[in-house]
Image 1 (cartoon, one colour):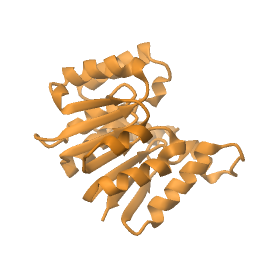
Image 2: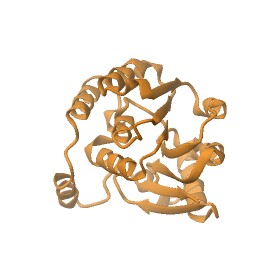
Image 3: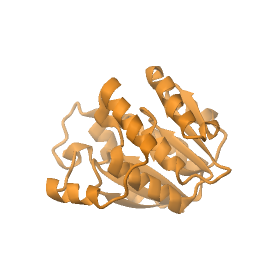
Image 4: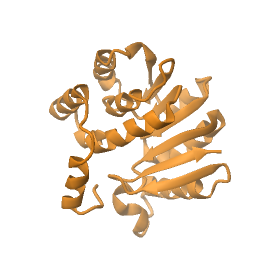
Length: 213
C-alpha cells in the first residue's frame, strides 16, 4: 500500500536510482510466474535496502522471508567482500528460482538458503548479525525479535517491513486479526525497548529502521 499521493510517489521513484538489470529480470519473471507478485520488495524499496546496506557495510546479513530473492540481492550490493547472507523461507517451490538469481549475481556462494520455519531454524544458526531484514509472517514478528536480539552485534541494524500493514495499525483492532495485533506489539516494543533506537518510515507499507545499542 502507498500512503503518499500517487503523483508524489511516482516523482520519488523517478528521481531514485534505477534498479540493476539482474533485478529487472527477476522482477519480470516474478510477475510472470509466481503467485502474489506484489510481495516483491520492488524497485523503490529495493534501492532503499541497497543504499542502507552500502552505508552499513555488513559482514553478516540475515533475511527472514526471501520470496523470490529480490531483497536479498539488493542487500548483497552493500555486503562486505568477506561477508555472507543467510536467507530463511518456508516456500520450497521458490527455492530454485532464488538460487538461479543468487548464482547469476556472481556471489551465489555467499548467499546461504535455509528452507523451513524460521522459529525452528533461528536457534540453530550460530551467528552474530550486522543487518537483519524482517519480512516474514507478521504474527511471529515479536517472537523473531526475541530470538534475533541476542544474536545482534552492537550497532547492528534491524529493518522491518510491512509495519503499517495497509493502515490497519491505526484502525480499530478486530478480535480475530492476529497479524495486526502482533504488529502493534512489535512496533511498540521497537519504540520502547531500552536496547533499541527506532524510526518508522512510511515507505511503501511501512519500513522500520532499528539500531541495536
